[in-house]
Image (cartoon, rainbow, N blue to C red; front, side):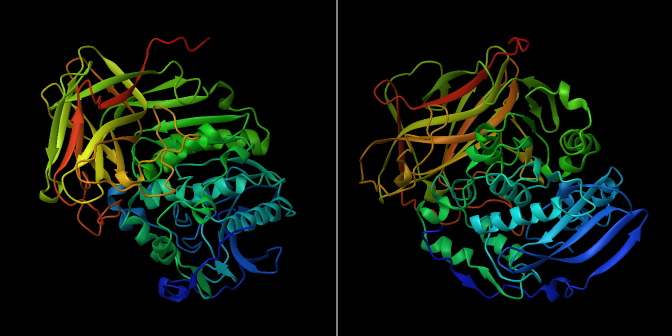
Length: 550
């Protein structure tokens, strides 16, 4: 039961304006695939939603559901809408919905692909809520519907990217009886911490853009913009949009990437770590997420997983390691390595201490460095590795800070790799960009209070329950979570820590990515370091010679 009241509003766009015709049930055969359009499904409370079903023309099939608000009719040409995403047209058919599996491929292998328009979206009845407990119950009802069709083998799987993954976390926590396997492929699990407020700093671009993508309806939709403005702290409303991961017991093949900093990286890895499934696998890559989902090798991995759990076949998953991760060297270059767990077993956390302009193995003399974020200034701290090192996992930054003006401080952090000549090494970033960081972190200092039940030394988790404002000259310790990454550094290569008061990676609008345009910085800000106030960066060092057989 919810302890709050949703706010609703008229739709932002009528479906017809986006090419969605009123529902009319139709059937057609396309090269052995039965395409059944606008099938009416009645939910337990009597509301009717509409789904498109693609299945083999004859025989029994295993259902795959791709649940999201983008429109079942909206077959997307990524090459037109997101040309830098590198989703090649020849890898998907014209029937592939946005971020969803390709029906032509899957029906040829004995599957049915079901694309719904959830409650209150497009022409479905009811009022739309997003990543809510109510939506999860609707999703569970559709799973049971799919599992009991005459053409169904009764074992339902879930697939899809982004929202289509976040919705998987939510429904899987309910463990509906006919749900047999999930394949979360990069999707957040904590809406507040991973999308709406990075370190307490409001995200002002991507989250504000999403209602325009989700808000097509003939009824009413949840007013996310109003609710976000009314709820700046973490409360029961935001908790209702956080997946209860420990309740998930279904077999899971989870895919994450190092590259979706500020969107999916953290939540996907937390999803794998926290779910209670006895049979689960993690694959982490360093590529562009949409492109990688549709790569033939990745599709075959997905099918090996579903063939086993939905069709009862012996497949290659018997030989899969529990974790397979890409150790990046630079853009689209790296090696895939196995591991037994996440975080990686035998991780050694090492402190690099801040000194003016440097990161060093021991704390130095007491010092203070300052910068003026209102003038666009930043601070840089470099460390050169004397021997090869692999850094895989969370980093955590402890700073001692103060302000010369104002009562708050917004801190933006980037980790970068330097080559032997001191040049920044670029990585894939946010599905479309090619000059991204190793990792990112953020903090609004008034949100510095940690959640003691969630936090670990390598992963400080903010409570976001109250604000603790600063006074001028007051020096306080703060802990900044830096999202997970996996990077190899050769001897002579370096790690750079960048600290400033605004987004370190920014792109001209209308490029879609995370922005933070409502900062509270007022003047010069100070970072204190040395033996008295040991500001430090905690890095996760992996032993590449660890014994994976024991």
